[in-house]
Length: 120
Image: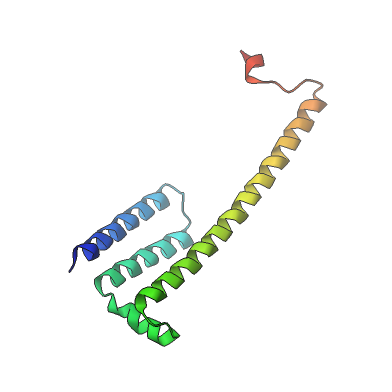
């Protein structure tokens, strides 16, 4: 086993431990826990036996296993970026709604919006 294979395998084990820790802290749902554990197991498996990507690449019509991994990685990264942008837009809309609601409530009280300096 080469040094890079050992490094990738150790990193995959580290990533699994971090994933489990985030799940225990409530930062990950069970679906994402399963997804990431399976992902890191596959990464570790490919690190141990890289010729498996060549077999899969031939099945889907790609020349080399490394090319297949790069194509799949790019697709996954673009999808995750797409999801992140969607989540960011949702959060921005929610913040806008909350700020508007707070402003209306403050106006209904007849007072002005307080700043940190006002509370000192």
